[in-house]
Length: 282
Image (cartoon, rainbow, N blue to C red; front, side, top):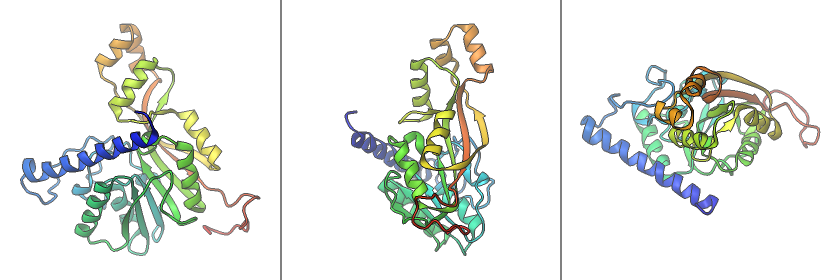
């Protein structure tokens, strides 16, 4: 792949195909065509029992559940990065209620189209979906009380730019809560690349410490890990890259690929900001 734009086009194509496949499943395999809930999800966490769950919005693409750990309050404005068919937006809407607002941003037109249809089915008038790139978010400065994301940074070429955009759209004291695929410890380079492909991390997963340092560089504070799960890699992959004893040690040890949910806060203000009078979420 020659350029970042080529990479993004390949992602758009991939996720457009996922939408078409999901629609074919509902119409052909399921036969009910009405969101009966028979779609089997491959997410790290099971969404199906969460308040606000809508089966047609669940394409099995999540790497965690940021809405469970984000400090969303009734009446908040929430922005979801890489919103897909809308599942995390609908879970956030259940928390923020009719007095709040939820904005989903996705770079794939077919995903935005599907999410808007799902919103109509759900009957929400305060959930909207915008076509856009998270490296240049179509959201005004200091709009959001909370920004959530689910597996999106591992698909993002310029993560620093994306985090700076999140910082821009958050209100002071606003929170970012993001689930992503990250790495702990050492892995052979080839194994790391294969693991990223296996987990769908098209832009590559990062070491946890590097991820946190990037958040700090963007200006975030109060960074904490809310949840983490080590993800199992196939035995064939481990044994291809590691001797049998090291494969066992790797599976039982700390090193590996993880689903991690982090939260971080945009501080009240910085001295170099024009509006450095701090009060609440302004």
